[in-house]
Amino acid sequence: MIMGFILIAFFLAVSIALINGKLSFLVDGYNSVNELDKNKYDERKVCKETGFELLFADIVLMVVMVLLNTDYGKSHSAAIGLISAVIIVALTFGNVLITRKNKERYYKDEFKTKKD
Image (tube, one colour):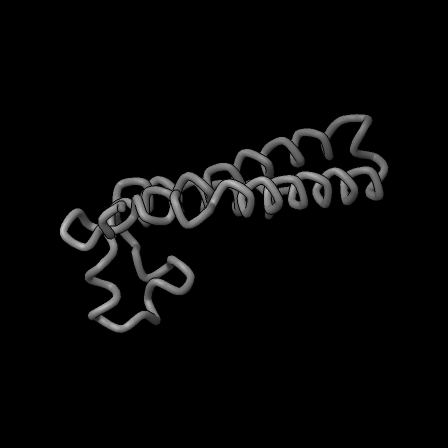
């Protein structure tokens, strides 16, 4: 239980730092991109979006910790099912929403493609 609250505090601190545009090296894939491609993206917007995603995961973790400390949480299979359901819904919803049109908003203005 204590470890869960330590993870919540850690994720909360990292998500706040990402929302403020710091810790861009933690963004998956962004750090491994070469400098030419990295200059095409607005680093602050990428960090902010990643920070909000991590904040969402932190909120889910808080809800699960509260549920585990109630009568509903006595069954670990129910908690695992809840975590799995939330992760599947979040990943599916995120993949549907992140399309080519939404990805273009991360480009800096001078690199945006012109619409025909």
